[in-house]
Image (cartoon, rainbow, N blue to C red; front, side, top):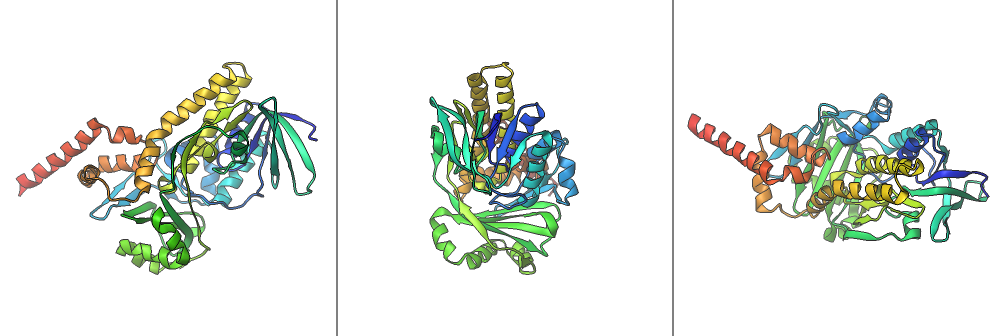
Length: 412
């Protein structure tokens, strides 16, 4: 039996869990964070820290540490649509660049930050049971490397343990906005494939790929296919992965001169929202909300949830707001913020030909740097799809294209 009662126990110590623990510990709360893994260690991930996630790292005082690891900055996102390529700046003056860190580096940095803030970190700890009393979560039961079963109690247990969350399975929260997997993909790392500060994405009906520079002069390259093709493609991952690059001959030529440095890792994921709180429990990151990885929003979502949830719990503990009121605010704010991106992501992940109106809009945006920057910022989570695709902004883009065409015809 554990000896101490904690204010919060966080299950999962990666991109959602460690920041949640760190932020609460910095406010003086007694926090325990546990994880089955030992750090540094790898995990399936899209890797991208879009500019809003970079801003979080800056707020937390951790960005300089990340930069010091040698992770290269990304200042341009490109989108190859076939007929043309849109290239734009993903960030703002406050956070102009993105990063694509290896999870072996980023997660260790976050775990260390939680520990430095005063949270107790237990690595290689397996949770076997969520302890419930009178329909309220009150703790966890599990074991470390020595196998000895321990029980720890807390006012709130936070599940930051991914889309297959052990806590979520135990409390069975309401699940909504469910969509099936749209695509499946595999990624690996390549040397000899310089990216010059670019995150590149190329989409065609039924397939696509993306690439970004990461640590150790390596490039992360992911290739995927619509879900109805995924099972068949898995029969020969390497051949199908490499063949996908033929949709963009220029990139295919570049990667032929590169060397694969790691095994393939891949998956397909469902899309859903879960109610992220209840009596004595909360969910953050993929445990509470998951969408396809095509827009690479997972780390950004985890950071946002960590801040929102930690703030709500602080309000509850300090009696600024009731637990239910504060956590309902977390729930509402999360959903309002991410729903437009959820819909946009599902549309992209279907890997279907863009509807004529979208194709026309992207064609009008091509060559208009402000419009291309806007599209990059949508994919970076800086600008809401609802704002970019609003009637007013769409009219502005088409008007600018018409003006450009008129000037061109006049000059001729």
